[in-house]
Image 1 (cartoon, rainbow, N blue to C red):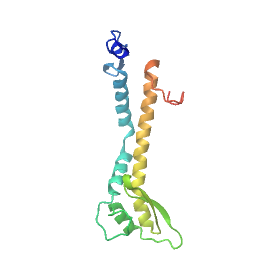
Image 2 (image 1 turned 90 degrees about the vertical axis):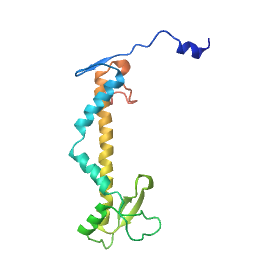
Image 3 (image 1 turned 90 degrees about the horizontal axis):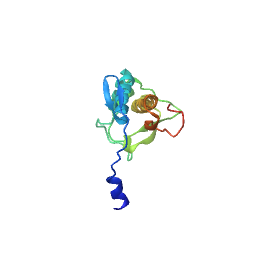
Length: 164
């Protein structure tokens, strides 16, 4: 029998630690982590997340527009149209940088129109809030899990002590 066959026919199964959490019993370490993550998500997500999603959706350039120069993002967004109308202010001697495009086609553009700048910036603010939430939920979940789990089941974050 080769080494591989010996490994898969081994009759000594590894002991799995089981946990209780709230009303749930006999949870594996992975199930416990998922329960903690679901709870952290419910605590983290709130009204600012609705605003984040709305900023991303309303900032997506799906409306048709007149011809644009080569290399420009096709279409325009609802946010851009509204901001250009409400903030119709042009700077005379300065240009403001803004990230345009979608996730696959991000590029930097410059404008002297305040409304265009605000309209291009709002979706990025939505993405930043969303990324912050994902990172925050992950860190808080790992910290809570490491406080509950037995030492052999803890998640090593490679920065001893940072996540509990």
